Image 1 (cartoon, rainbow, N blue to C red):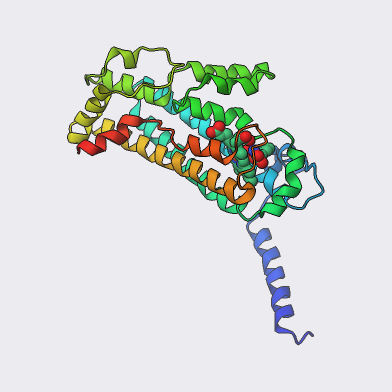
Image 2: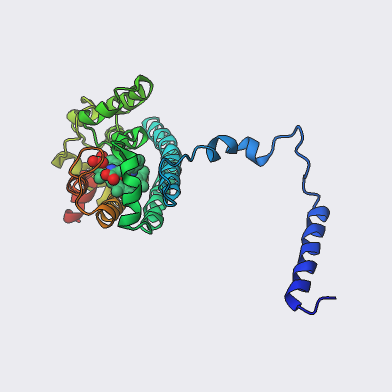
Length: 292
Ligand code: HEM
Ligand SMILES: N[C@@H](CC(=O)c1ccccc1NC=O)C(=O)O
């Protein structure tokens, strides 16, 4: 009999653990049945981490980006469905999805904390192996930017070598953005949105206007009268707020890890990412607040 209280505690809890599994009648035999790993295609996902360098920290770098791309996949799925819901006047359905998109964006903001544990020398050991690859070439990210209205034809070019992906990014470029559909909705609801905003070349960057600010102001000055449009405006605010935080954490993390080195994607690095901080997706949603 062992005199060590920890070893007897371990034995009894092991026995207890086994008893619970038996009593609860957990399914233990997966011969011919679909298991957790089968359903989630874990063999495919968990065999996709292939470091190129001998460095320990490359696994962090790969997992961080792969998980980000998975969250972006869900974000696009929700965002595109929300845009469709707005176009077809199903606002409660759109709100549910937009709230989820904002939460995913917040999740990605917090994810920077994990990557920021990588020091400059640790990243320098990996960086040569990345060659000219860069997040700049993320086609899902570009679809998100385009769907949110940040249109820029130059951003199509890195995808030209992959016609399959290029077609998807091109479609997001040509389609009305989330904000375009919101303005069309405002017009259907009788607000005074000029035609240049409801029927335009969707590939062009969104042109902010006083007329649109006035339309939103009508909503914001009397929220009870236009409750769902007011709620929509606030959902757009949450979304852009979260997106701004993501951009900011990106540039700060990049500065702490590579300083002012040029980016592997060919840009000036931090200087480019700082310019991106000036992006405004839903301009009148912000400017209207000066009038309230
Ligand atoms: C140590 C980590 C990171 C560094 C040093 C870094 C660096 C950079 C740099 C310098 C650029 C500018 C383009 C270039 O010339 O390469 C860039 C762009 C970009 N990065 Fe990162 N990045 C890091 C992590 C991430 C992560 C975790 C993501 C998440 C998916 C990400 C997504 C992007 C995206 C989407 C762009 C394009 C942004 C735009 O065009 O506005 N990056 N990154
Ligand atoms: N642009 C980064 C490289 C980089 O960050 C990266 C490279 C390959 C895959 C994802 C990346 N992440 C985001 O840009 C750099 O200049 O170090």
